[in-house]
Amino acid sequence: QVQLVESGGGLVQSGGSLRLSCAASGSISRIYGMGWYRQAPGKQRELVATITDSGSTNYADSVKGRFTISRDNAKNTVYLQMNSLKPEDTAVYYCNAQVRTQIGIIGNYWGQGTQVTVSS
Image (tube, rainbow, N blue to C red; front, side, top):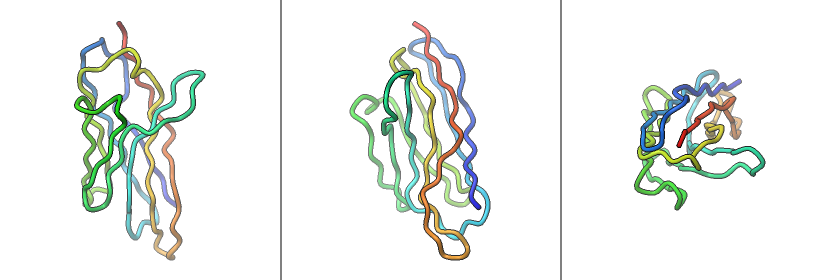
């Protein structure tokens, strides 16, 4: 079994910064892509940023230049540095990872989500 645990959410004023972390644990052989998604009330879950195991990144247009995704493969952890936050960034942020377990099964895993609220 694989678990993803997010941390770092909270309440911040517009223009402020937050750093989210997501640590993967459990029966892990290898982690491929990792990413962050978000879901605002009444809206569908959307991609925020992804990073491959080799470090290639991809961002939603709405966060380019403000958010930075990174990962520490030794710690099985992915980060999301969020700067210049806007009220429209308010959402539950979910961590995602594609993981090969120690018995060779590749699966797509999600964290429980962390709330980010940006006040105007």
